[in-house]
Every structure is written in C-alpha cells, then in structure tokens.
Length: 399
Ligand code: FEO
Image 1 (spheres, rainbow, N blue to C red):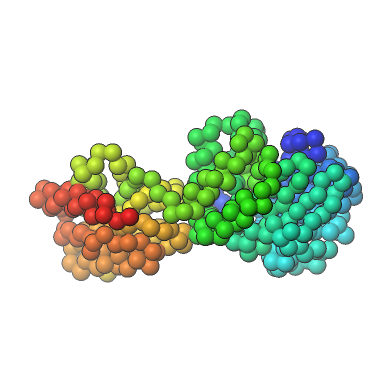
Image 2 (cartoon, rainbow, N blue to C red; image 1 turned 30 degrees about the vertical axis):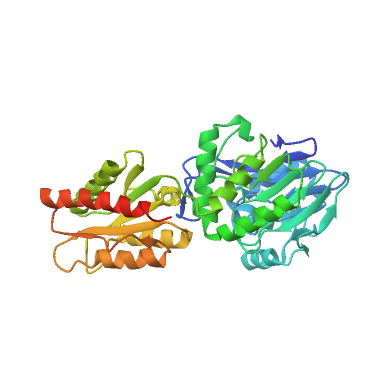
C-alpha cells in the first residue's frame, strides 16, 4: 500500500528492513533503508524515481493497485543509480513510450546500465513541467553525488524531491521526521553525509546556497532514502551547510590494528595521555579489523584529529589499516589533524608509510609519530602517555 504524503502525492516505494550492506559491501545499513518512489496525481500523473531492481516486480504490482500504469504521463528519474532506476526496465516493458525526464548525464548513466533507448526528455536547471495545479521545476545537482543527479521542486505542494540529498538509510513504517527518534535520524543522516556526500562538500555548499537563494517555500523535503523531513524541513538543509564546512566536534579517535596487542597497548596509552591533557575531549578507539568501516568513517568525519596505528608487517602496515586509509582518502576531509604510531621488531616502516597516506588524504600531520620497538614496557607506555599529552597540546595550536 502506498502512503499518503499530501492530497496529491503518495509514497509508492519499498522499505527494505533486511538491508545491512549497501553499495556492495561499502556501506553498512544497521537500520535498513528504503527506496522512495513518489506518485503525483495532478491533472497529469507523474512517477518520481523507482526502486532497486530486486524489488521491481513487487513495486510494479503495488503501483498497479494505485494507478493504471497507462495513466502515468511522465516518469522523472532524478538520478540513474540502480537503487532508484532499477525498476525502470520492468516498468518500461509495461509503458514503453512514457517519457522519462532526466538530465543529459542521467540519459548516459541509464543507457549505460540498461542499454535501452527509452523516450528520454533531457532537462536542465530551471526547466519546468506543467502538470495541472502544480508546476514541477528541475534543479540539476551534479555530484550530489553523481554527475546525473537532479532535484525536482513541486510548487503548490511546496515539496523538494531531493533524491539522495538529505537522505538516510533508515527503515521505518513511520515516514515523517516528527514520527521517528530524532537522535537516530540525525545519526543516520550524518553517517550518510560522511560516507556518501562528504567528498563533494564544496558542491553541496554551492548547491544549498543556490537553493536557499531561490527562496522556494519548502514544506516537505522528500529524499529517495529514509525519512521525509516535514517538521522544520530546513533543519537538514542547515545541517548540510555545517557538515559541508570542514565539520568537526571536540573528538579525537585512534584507529589501529594489532597482531599481538603491542600496538593496541600503545593506542590505549596515547588515549590516556590525551584524556589527562583534557578530560573534556572525547577520545574513542577503534580496531579497524573488528569495527564496521562505515562507522569508522563517520567517526573520522566527526573528529578534530585522528591517530592511526599499525605494527610493521612485511615492510608495510596491516591490511585493515590500508583499507581504512583508502576510505579516509576518498572522503576528502578538510582541516583535520593526524599522527601515526606502531610497534615493530626490525624494519619499522609502518609509521612513515601511514604518515605518507595521511598527507595524501589532506590531513595536517602533528609530528613524525611514535614507533615502539617490540612490546612497550612500562617506561615506553609512560612515554606514550606523554606523547598523547604533547599531541593534544600541539593540536590545540592548529586552527
Ligand atoms: Fe541512492 Fe546514488 O543512489
């Protein structure tokens, strides 16, 4: 059954309670997700986005309960990624001539995936589609988060259909933000921003300012994943401005991997030193081989600084550290500080190599790092506590 959003708009998407991994294995979805598709019934009937391919039959069968498919006048594809376009092949078998409104880049991404020459109508920012009492306006939003992305604004109902923007992986039977736990919702929205949109923060700032400058009255923000923003919908827009502007909280995290616990002991001693320096700062430790990588990136996003540790193994660092460093590089975070540490038996290159990766990822290195030969004894642990204190003191001098 669809869910009523306004008199003219019905949610016809799929709530995916089972989903625990998204983008292959890239993104953990502890609370599931949803693929939001919206049916507008004005003088013309419009379908905005579809759902992920595994649910295409279910989607079409339920859509048929809402409307005779032949009465759909227009399809709008705000974004070509498979979680939103995946039911197009099945749908277009039913209504092959229906025009699909999308950006020029979406024509490329949709054709590139499905190899079909459907009736595409290319639109640009400012183009309008009259559908009766409402007019739809298209707003291109390239790299939020694909080149093909656009938003669609519905004027009389004052709805911004923002696709991935302002979304969250959050399965819920209640679809509005005033009907779910606000803390959980913000947690998922921030995780989504940190892991999906953070690399494109400069574009987010530009696009959000452009939309604010358009002075569009907005009563509802309807993303393509998760919960609809109804109560104070602009709160998430202002959050995006904050998150896009080198966001940081008073938090330092230590990410490490360890073979026989020497590097773990180092991590804990450094953390103690930071806590002695400032009991108010939040310090968290994550073993990268045991912790969900999406959650680590979220914590990196929230941090002022990170300290990364690995023992030296085969003249390098451990596999899980290599993976997390690659994800950190991809997030393109700004104005964050870092350092490295690790134990070693003989060659001891890990700290230098981690430093190189942190510099490539855009972090400001606080120092050359800390290497401990073999397992740290009490004397070395004491030096590590002092190192943590000194790290914090130097960090305070970085703005
Ligand atoms: Fe939810 Fe970029 O797809």
